[in-house]
Amino acid sequence: MLSARSRAILDRYALSSRAVSRQSGERSSREPGQSVEFHDFRPYQPGDELRYVDWRVYARTGRLYTRLYQAERAVKLHLVLDNSASMSIGLKARYARTLVQLLSYVAQRDAPTQVHLLGGGRSRQLQGPAGMRETWRFVEEAPVVSGEEAGALGALKRFALGLPSQRGSGLALVVSDLFEDAPIRPALTALKARGMDIAFLQVVAAEDLEPPSGLLELHELESGGRLPAGPEETKAYRDEVQRYLERTRNAVLRAGFRHLLLRSPAGGTADELERDAFAALIRSAVLVKR
Image (cartoon, rainbow, N blue to C red; front, side, top):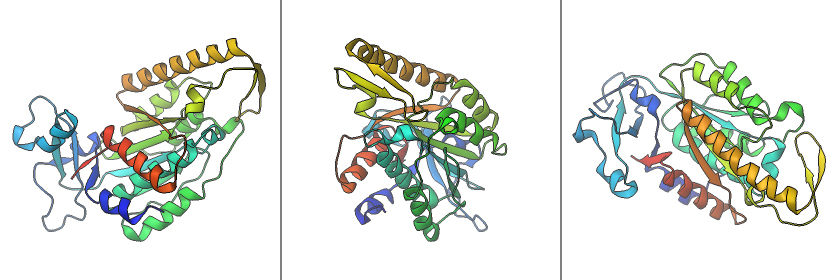
């Protein structure tokens, strides 16, 4: 559960989503009959009126954002959490769950929100304070899964194919290390066909990037395979991880989605983990000031 301090700070923030702009007007939706006010931002585009630019965000980030107000209906939020075995390396799993809890707190105040596990299973679609504890409990109790069906990219494609087309009214935030020996393009193609705004929060641990040198045995957590690894293999692994991260980022950006690389802390208390995750979401502009 998030601390009271974190919740008080999060009350001042909203999600940044391009999905909002496709169905937004220029007025705050405080009119009679409007059930949800979803206040958000998107990157400035040529032609936007300067009076809607948020100069406080610009002063803080150095980037221009246009202030948006939803005029009619809420964006549906899908938080996708990777609970595969590779997430158990370092503090990735704890960090990813903390990110999803922070995001769900912000999202559920404004829009129907559902958490999906890449290992299978999903929460109820909930909105408002009443559903918050149920969502957090679902995230905390998510089991670690392994085996051939646990790969993040294959599961992401199945998630996308299970969604109806939500062109202009859906946002999915994927929290995963995206580690799988498989191409990412089929998953991106399936997601693009849904017509949703997608952001990838790729979480990696220090152990993923810099394994210690020496005589090691590499364990493939999701398939159970084992491979001896000496100094040369360790160096080759480090180089390949960097190439994989670059390929993944480029593929995501070419698909028109956002990609953010987040490094999980090496340690810390629950409060410290919350503060680190919150700071990462602010730096990457996933959360912006209301």
